Image (tube, rainbow, N blue to C red; front, side, top):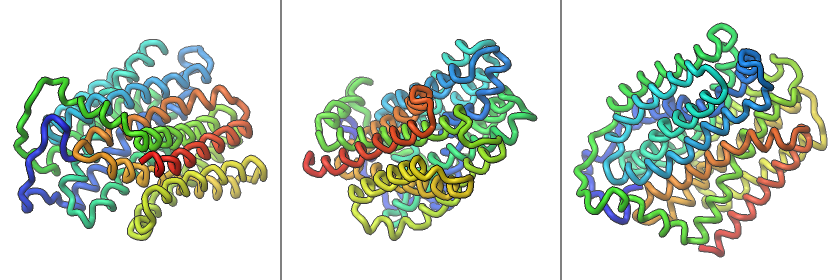
Length: 396
């Protein structure tokens, strides 16, 4: 995350390089929840939006996919640019733009306009993750770096639960338009807070053309081991978003209160996994990532075979979420190990793959329809991801 092939960042003075851990991680985690949460926030609002526009709720899953596609594409654009121009500088522009784009979604007059604006919103919001993750890898004290990265990564994942719960609880009072306006205000606050906690960018020698920032992309994609890990990364959020979308549109959870409880059941796992990071990192990244995806696959198969009641389903979902929360950071770490001097670009590709999966997840749920079929399909997808991770050891 420190350099690109075309514009190496200078070595940072040791005293200036160390970011304040507590303040930085707190602000970054909250901003990660807000940013990534825009992907999931509309899932509980699909019914209200469909009723207001007089369209089927299933057709509005494109509102999730549209944001995910723009979000994923934005990583490819902004990851290399953060290497070239600096993390703080990029976010100083990016978060205010995200606030404006989010406010525009709130005034969408029809589904087509809303879908188009969700793509724009996704691209704008995508400025945060690659710059933030690269900043943590550069400026946090090395012995605390993995804790910081895992905490922020867990924030991105926790958004799937937190923003769905918030939308379900507040949506009736604020309406879907109100939820987007509140999010726009939150991005404005985040822009001020992020700029306040980030250290100034080091002086960077910018050489070559604007497009030279992207020269590292084909070099990285030519590595078979990285390609396999990126492919495995797609399965993480594809399964995660598809599962929660399936719970929403199939009615498998039963009552709205039961659905709220199931969404909230993953929160303890998302809190616990970062706390266990000092022990988890003792397991090498690749076996840890593969094991996490296998755990997720087995959990989904168990749900499909056992058809547990509400309490059993909540407990199994907590296990599944723990596997996702552990697998994502492990894949991030394994990609960084092969990135060399183009770490920012490599992790932008990682995040692109992660949220590419998130963008196709709702379509998987809509395509498979039946919830049990969805469970088995997602388990197979995760097993294929684990196989790809293990194959990347030889691809290296």
